[in-house]
Image (tube, rainbow, N blue to C red; front, side, top):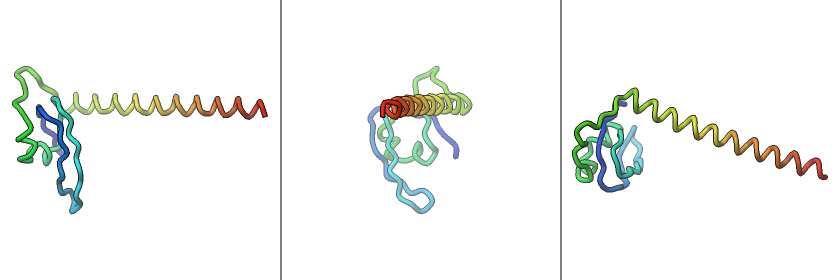
Length: 95
């Protein structure tokens, strides 16, 4: 689905219908890319301001940002799992 760059001035939760299902979409304050159906909703528009001049974000930049966040999350989960395994192994050796 296409996205649109918007400047949200106040966080809100939008209830929207997607694929016949009611979905609660939490929208945080700040400049961000939102799905077209959320970005174009009248309630989103009521909580938005114009995106400042000079602020741009291409779809590729948005995807790179999302990929980096996902990678960081996965690395943190992997590190936590390794620490938990090491702790369990140490406890097993003491037994």
